[in-house]
Amino acid sequence: MKIGRYYTPGMPPADDAGAAPAQHKAAAPASVACYVLTVSDSRTPDTDTGGKAIRDLLEAAGHTVSGYMIVRDEPAQVTARVREQLADARTQVVITTGGTGITSRDGTFEAVDGLLEKRLDGFGELFRMLSFHEIGAAAMMSRATAGTAGRTALFVLPGSPGAVRLAMTRLILPELGHVVQQLNR
Image (cartoon, rainbow, N blue to C red):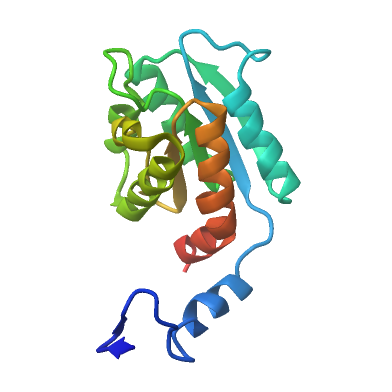
């Protein structure tokens, strides 16, 4: 049932409600260039299952992995690497994995949050909601976030492969081209 411009949850939208997003998605690029950054004090290229999952899922969906690196969970290192990618016109999206918890060593959120010009609060909210259905109340300890800096989208994901797959398949991949399309308007 329509209420003003909004719709009652669970009710089908009016015929024109999906027109704008559908038109935007139709104009969205099918392939975007993504840089993957793993933040970890212990992962190596051989043991980085979260970073590998991101790269594999991006490539399977037809996107390009423009680069990949592992850095220690030191906010200055994370910020420096993300800034490098923001300065690279070829990079359209930066996806980090790791360092989003609440331990004393988890600093990815702080390292990236200060770079965001616009926050996509709904990403973190939706991720925690979906995570809750899989892992229960522990989902509240994730500080997964997303936003934009200039014409680059940034997604900050936990390090677990399960969390990475959840975020990639349910949230990021379905909207990745659309996000990039909107950033270039």
